[in-house]
Length: 169
Image (cartoon, rainbow, N blue to C red; front, side, top):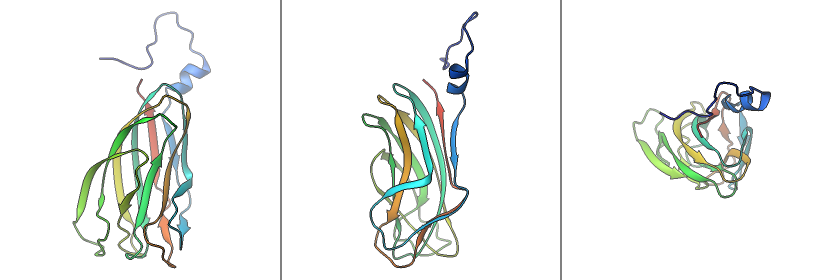
């Protein structure tokens, strides 16, 4: 079994090495609303900085709400040259019944906009996923989002949504 980082007897345990072992986490402390907007942009709180030439395990949970006619486009933006994908379980786009079991689990490449349902302005839709990210260049990882169909009723990325990265190589 490989372990990252490999630490040998006599190795100096400095701040850089210790910090490289700490998971990177971002959590929304307040909800963010966007209305009449179909251009995805980074969520102001769901942004993390990653190292070059690294491999990460990614896990995330986001809650979204809004007018069912708008739905939501969500995309992970990663540093240039990065590869990998994630699988997310969430409500299919276009599902307007809040308690519907119409869910999907799909493998998605980073950088691809994917549509998620916003079944209600009153009840948030929960989505959970995990994946693997391999970087060549350092930079930022962000969850970007906008409405799928422009709508005057705001779509919302709810408070307590989060993203977590753990370096594994």
